[in-house]
Amino acid sequence: MRLLLIHADHFEYETLGKAVKEPEPLQELSRRGGLENGLVVFCTVEKPDEAEPEKVAENAASSIEEVLGWLKTHKVMIYPYAHLSGNLASRDPAIRVLKTLEGHLAAKGYGVSRSPFGWYKSFTISAKGHPLSELSRTIVSQAPQKQVAAQQRSEYKVMDESGSLHDPDTFQAGPGQEEFGALVEKEALKKGLAGGEPHFLDYAKRFGVEWESFSDVGHMRFGPEATLIMELLADYANLTIRRIGIPILSVKGTNMFDVTVKPIKEHLQLFGSRAYEVQVDERAFVLRYAACFQQFAMVKDWTLSYRNLPFGTFEVADSYRMEQSGELLLSFRLRKFLMPDLHIYLKNLSEAIEVGGKVHDVIYEEIRKVPREYVSLYNTTRSFFDSHKQLFLDLVKVEKKPILINFVPDGIYYWVLNVEYNIVDDLERPREIATFQIDVGNAERFGISYTNEKGEKQFPVIIHTAVLGGLERYLFALLDSALRLEKSGRKPMLPVWVSPVQVRIIPVAKQFVQPALSLLEQLETAGMRVDLDDREDTIQSRVREAELSWVPYVVIYGDREVHGADLSVRARSDGKEIKMAVSTLVTRISGELEGYPARSLSYPKLLTQRPGYKRI
Image 1 (cartoon, rainbow, N blue to C red):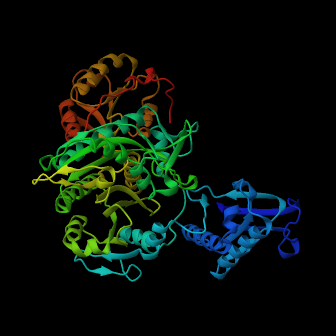
Image 2 (cartoon, rainbow, N blue to C red; image 1 turned 180 degrees about the horizontal axis):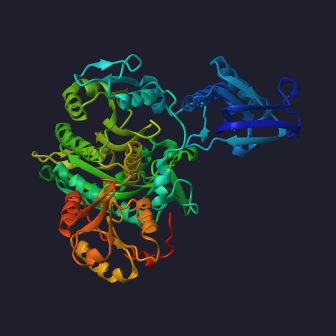
Image 3 (cartoon, rainbow, N blue to C red; image 1 turned 90 degrees about the vertical axis):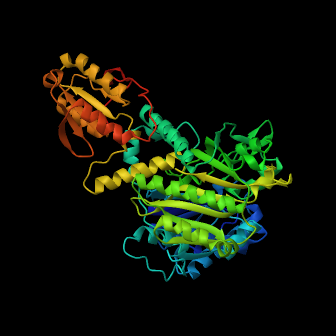
């Protein structure tokens, strides 16, 4: 069964004529119908659904109910729609599925209406347009066995800083724990969260962060400024992981893998419909969803000894996931993204726990620099938790707040611990950014082994982590944090190290352009990215342009500055103009750049030389 779900402000239809020989009798349903502020479910019942129509309807009702919870609406219109599949069910089974679906939803208290089957109809619809307003679902009679087991036996608990476990539905978040409460509501209590369009999207456009309309949905493009930002983020991801304190080897490889290769096929079973597959010369390939496949395929060919461990392999990897089109969100939920993926190979679980603690420390150090806090979901098994409770206590000491634990059955996943680090965004929705896993299954699956002190073959434990998170998601976190600055009454900005232009010089008149270039070169030599607005426009207009471009430091340059007076500097973080010597400006900015990567400006320094340059 295929579903297309539209959250609509308004929907109405009118029955016109027969579409099949024996349509559903009109007297059973209305010739006209509609709803206001509800969910329209376009339904295509398929041939395989005839085998277990009741089960299909039950699973469809559960899926629809989940979406209704997200949207916080109780109104549903079931609308038969034959255009989502070419493998249509027969008349009677199709009507049976639709009626059963209607009955399931009505029994749960939803306001359900259904349009008649087998008729041509005209309709009008006005979609709300937020990220969850357009979703699609494929419903089958039975989920894969492993997924069913996980759903049936998954159990959520809140663990406080003392190690005590609490039921999520009775846990009361304390003062300052509102963000953690949002995580509990979304993940454990499955409550619908606020909708709407995130405000950070306006910020993204300023830097040329956009969807690529010529590609599949979910693919982004980056203009010159955004490209420089992404390059800096990749550099920083590489620097950050070195603080874990182990040897790390940078590698590169392909993003396409043969689905018939046994370990690839086995691993993909956990990802199901999220696998991004392509056909080439009648062969099926999957585009990798992280760097796992390439790094594991490479390391399995290396001769390893216990003396080599631990070590890591790292790549900023083109990654692909077939996310639902209606759930896509620029810079956050994508079909193609950049994952700074680190895998650490360790002798045993004890060593993995020790190194994992260091990974966790670095993950928190980085988010607190933004500055933000994570709220974390720990996916694990009861047996691992009971055997390693001290690990959880140690990790919570770093968190300094409760954590949400999702207990899953043993033997379902390749990991024993999978931590999802979330910020809570402007819409009060948890958004996963960084990740950390302890993997006990993939080394054997991919044939990665080492020789221990006795000369015996052993399979290492593997840590998976993206310390910053996917690069687009880390950018999302930076932009959402800029929005928080604005809401607090300050000017929104990126950290100085990742701002494409760190200093802009504005000559007050044309005759000062040449001497201002000397200042530009001086600041460049000191390690800053500097440009110069040499356009023939008013000072006020050019200052406003720099403000809209979030340039951290703006220098007004005229006759006084030419003759050695202190610079007139507009510091964005201070929100005011400051007089300072060139050396003082250099010292101040150098302090803000310490410990971060440096790249030169990768496009013209003079604004008049930039192709297509225009005001925002």
